[in-house]
Image 1 (spheres, rainbow, N blue to C red):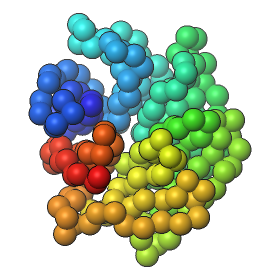
Image 2 (cartoon, one colour):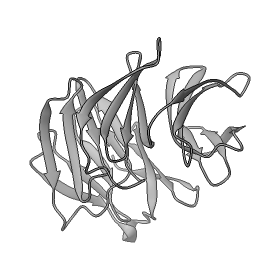
Image 3 (cartoon, rainbow, N blue to C red):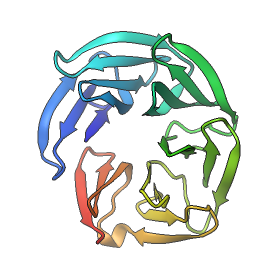
Image 4 (cartoon, rainbow, N blue to C red):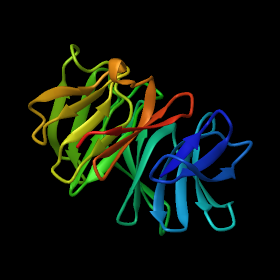
Length: 221
């Protein structure tokens, strides 16, 4: 698991149990989100500078810089980097030629804390108020889920093999059904969920990354 630590201007690699593996300093850049391209290459979006960077994990160096708009959440799929761009929507960059195309036009992405993931042929993202949206990779709308009673400024997002969507929402973890019609709260602050942005499921262990940089693990088997 790799984490973007914008406060300390670095990428942090942790083992599946949450313990530290290594650090990759990126100063003066402040990485916002990060995604793996392959076993030795990652991409990261940056705060305050409208660009994303490609980083070689072996030599811990930036190997390429791509100019973008104000991009935040980032994920990789089949040769393309998909990212949330504030006030514009979901963009995709072909990493072979740096060509950028708009997948979803969505000017409601206003917050810095917008995140994105893909699963199969679908894109899932946060950043539009108390809403989680799902589109196909071709930009066709699948569903939109909004429930202010359970979703409050959602941030990190993850989708499991069954299509269940895991979302961090105001010190809680919310599950949304694969068809986007139903939801329930899985964990709350009473279970130890802090204000967080990162979420990942690994063999029934839910890893949560807090805004203070903690990696917390919850058994949800």
